[in-house]
Length: 229
Image (cartoon, rainbow, N blue to C red; front, top):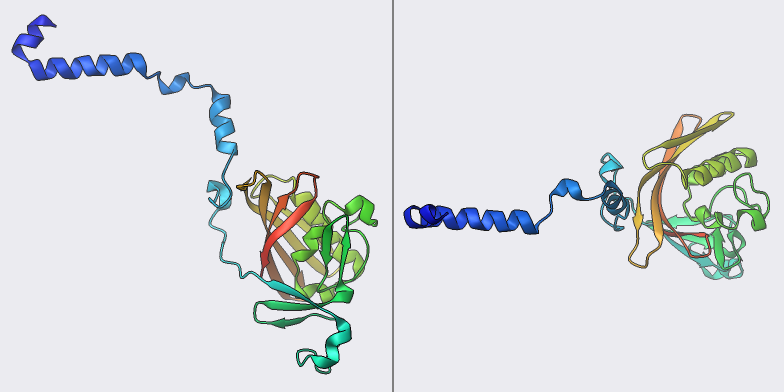
């Protein structure tokens, strides 16, 4: 090194700095696999996962407004329509109070389809309360399903909350079929675990799809934070 200091002072300085760096910074392979794996799983919500396969993220968010059916005669929105059914005006869905209820602080809103207790193959609210909020991810095509088909569709959504990201849960019942897929998952800024879902329903050659994001609350119940078609 003394020889290099006299003949090549710049080279000597570079070698010395490299030696210090090698001693201070541990090699990358020294990091345990578990640490890397844990860091990859803790994704911040809002940053798409690499496994999303390019699914769309621009689903139109629908705003649900509950309208008291007793006021229907004072609203031009209802006219001569069946006030027990929702009315869609652009991005806004007007839902009569008869289609909304609450259970254990969970808002259950069913703008379309059959109105019943429970969710999926859980026929009581006490059994289905963790999943009741998923009724907010809705499709108008549900009006064409019978109750058994609608419950089968909801059961696929329940299975999707624990399925791997990207795995499609398919269902079919008679002339109706559909899928539910988790597009991505992650952790929100408040620490809640969240998932984005895509639903499709096909009946009689007609197809509809919806998107929704739900987060799991500390008590284990899911809450839909955004939805759209």
